[in-house]
Image (cartoon, rainbow, N blue to C red; front, side, top):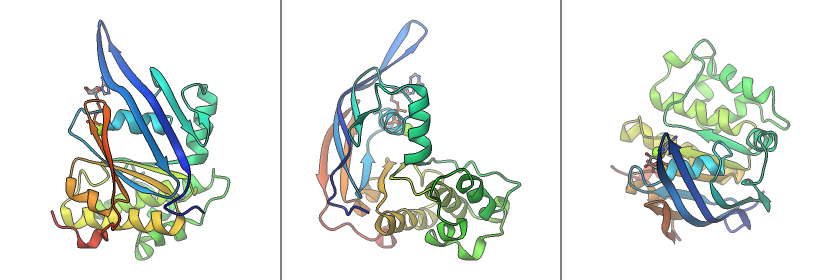
Length: 239
Ligand code: ADP
Ligand code: MG
């Protein structure tokens, strides 16, 4: 595994995204320039509507670009066909969203196992759930878990296939600060122990203190990036 000072995982240049809705066009991204490094924990900050989700979805192969280049380990995702993108998502990318989308009739362990059963080199569901601090909740159903615990099951599900990249869109958006902090601790632990390149979108500036690097998005562009030489443990955050 590569450490926080690893090479480029993503190299994005001139990335543009225009949504067409009927007769109108909405420009969501207007020339994004960005490099993401192997093993880093990046926090992406920006106002609502600035283009964060659009950028994350394109990085994850969930949405297509209008123009520009998105290299993942040297391979251009913009040129990739649907088949290649599906394989890319399945083998390389884990996603965590604001809402957990767990299957309510399955336990925590089973929610993770449905992914490990179709993965090439999965870790055991128990190991993934242990990494996010849920060793004592393996056989609980989603309804028996708090929101923060459910989100940590979703993180375990995303990382159990050992993806190179973990993309998180407002993972604490539906949580109070105490449980949100536990979710961030779980994400930071995964990043440090597995070396998973991790991007966390938030509009909460406090969360940027746990990052190796903060990426500020403004009006469809990367306004600036700032390295953080001393990331703070998530447990020390307050908001
Ligand atoms: P953020 O995640 O920073 O809030 P988004 O990437 O969701 O921003 O949105 C950026 C811009 O693109 C906004 O103006 C939004 O309304 C528009 N947009 C996002 N998704 C779509 C879509 N599927 N169709 C049309 N416009 C969209
Ligand atoms: Mg968004």
